[in-house]
Image (cartoon, rainbow, N blue to C red):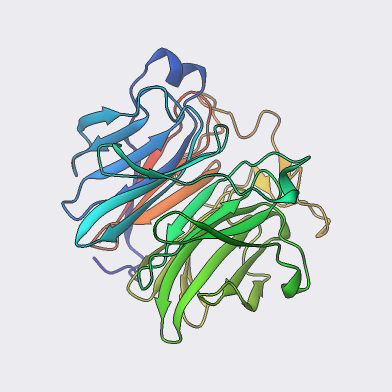
Length: 318
C-alpha cells in the first residue's frame, strides 16, 4: 500500500469491542498495535480489556481480568526476537511488561522521589530503547514527568522538561525511534501543544511547535511518523524533516482553544468526547483519537476515547 496515495477507504467500525457490562460502563479505548503475525491488539478500559483480533476483525482472545481497568498506553516491543507489550494503567499506576497474552513478566515500581509526596503518579505511556533496553515512562496525568528505568526495571532518573525552556505539561505519549542521528525519544507534550525530541540519555535536543495541537502518541512505518490528535485528526509526518505528509479525519465540531495559552477546554460540542450513538460521530471524521498504528502495509488503525467502547477505524490505502 502506498501511504502517499490520496486514495483510501475509511472503514468505519472496522471491529467493535465486546459489549460487556464493564465496557458499557466505561470501555474507553486507548491502545492499538499490530503484531508480526498480523493480529491487531486493542487495549481498552474493561474487564479482559486486552483484546486480540485477526486481520479480518474477528475476536480471537481477551485477557487481563480486572488488572487493567484503566488501560491506557500499549507499546509493542521486541526482545530476543520475542514480541512483548508494555502496558500502562494510569489509575493503578502499573507499568508492566507482558507477553502478547498479557502474562506479566515484569512490573516497574513507581518512582520514590519527592515529586510524589503530594502528587499522584498516573503514568500514561511507556516504550523501550531497542539499543540498550532502557524503559521510558510518561507520567502524563500526574506530575508531568518522564522517568527512565534500566532494562531490568531499576529506576534511574526523572526529567521535567525545564531544559527545553518549558516544563512538561501532560506528556501523554513517548516512543523511542532510531533515526539517522541515532535513538531519539519522541515525547507528545500534549498540553504544551508540541513534540519534544531528546537523545537516549534524556537530554533535550529540540521541540517541534506549531505542527500539532493535542498530540497523544506515535507510531512509525519506514520514514513516516503517525500522530493522533485528541482534538481530532490523525497526522502523518516525515520523521526526519517533520514535514506534514497527510492529515486524516479532522472534525469540524472540535478544535483547539482560540487562545494559544489555553489547552483545556477546547472548542467542542457539548458532551464531547463521549458522544457515542450521536450524529456527531461522523464518517470520515474522528472524534477523539488517542492512539493509532501502522500495519506492515502502511494501512492505519485508529482507536478513539469514547465512553462505552470507543470506535476502531481502519484507513486502508489503495
